[in-house]
Length: 191
Image (tube, rainbow, N blue to C red; front, side):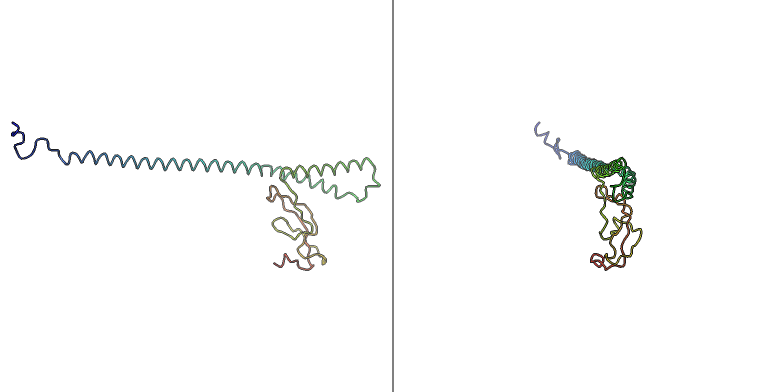
């Protein structure tokens, strides 16, 4: 009987070559599909993580910017108070000796209030721009007039009409100034 089972043209249990390659090919294509899906999901994950990091960084920058410049509108409004105190003090006579002691006490109080206001502004990052005697700088000064003064180099700030201020190093209000003309050219203006 053993000879009967082997007799014939082909063995009875001969595997079909097409049958074995189909499941293997399907498994490989499934593996490739899953690897592509994995790569796509990893890419999406990395993009989502990067976006989350960018959102955190932007939020931190916004908080920092708000901390530095959040009082900008308030600071601009309070500058008019500082201007009025400065004008009041500038209108006083140079010699306070002949003034009534009660009025002198009011003046001393206004001077103290002005110093305290300037101190509070500086504590919050609002600093006054020093303009007198400096060369005109369009980034910090607004020229309101020119004054003929041959003793001062042309383009020098000779009078400060309204002081300018910076907030955290950024311009809050330009100083309104008078600039000299007719004097010798300064070395800064020639370069």
